[in-house]
Image 1 (cartoon, rainbow, N blue to C red):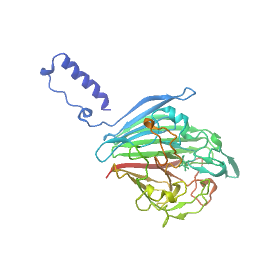
Image 2: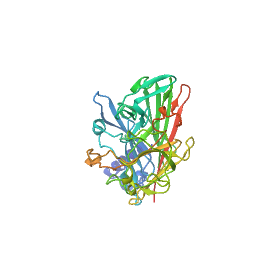
Image 3: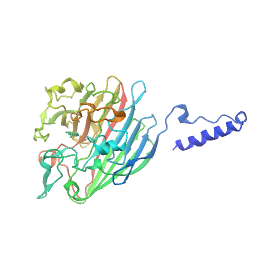
Image 4: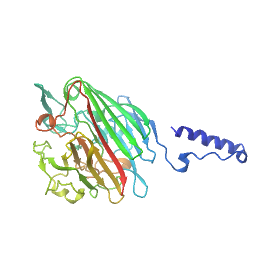
Length: 384
Ligand code: GLA
């Protein structure tokens, strides 16, 4: 890490100056960091403790262009993401809290890795290989985002690493057989990589010793104004001409409906707020990606016209949950004490379709022993 050289160089220069030797010495080369050029690096710091005393660490990843992502070991949560606007001014573009306490008290999955099953499983139950499994129920009658204590509320192991084009953090968690009602010991690895091409890539991997449903995703709430107001002026494009309509409990009916001619249509860029009042409650829907999944493809694009910040989402997953922070109601005081009102952030959760374990016509989410669950999602940032 170049950073390690920086302090000794500066201290040496100071020492020489103090000893009055400045004239005799040739000027020391200016380290990159002094010229205002960030140096790619990753650093670890303590971030607090859980009530049971377990330590939580936070890792700060900085790429060669100064983009900064902070990820903590509790929930594998992306705590902050500093991105430049079109003038080069940086702002944190994800919702969350300044300290661990907020995340421990109440969080609508801010920045978390969600699992073992992202989104809902109807009535917290499914059958697999002739056996019925009963899951923890935490959303009315349904199971949501892995249950009462999902992957967003556990401590992950963490190993930082550097590669030629980025810095990363490899997180691990062993979800025990029976946890939240799921069958099988599931060994999960999530790798965040912040590249010097301004991408935040997330690679998910899992293996099991019993057949089990698996559907992992990242639940970041983006706000490319830097969190200063709601997201209604953000323009969204989704590479999907169908979506999975839901019942009153947000469980898919099993149909795949066309978006054409409805307020669900984001096949061309549309401001989130332009038709949201025609969608009961706001957007909280799984879109069926035209790519069909399997290979990396562009799934979504978000543009914030004021700052010029742009995000593209690429994934190999078949679906994406577009959620517009409908349940935010101003009662959460987030970063800097700001009240997060309705639609203060939006999520683009790459995924398999909700309730797939109960929907035989949806692509399967069952992972079997001997197979490896492996998926990738890349968030690519730029300005226009
Ligand atoms: C997902 C769900 C929403 C909601 C949020 C968290 O996006 O689809 O219904 O549960 O997570 O509040």
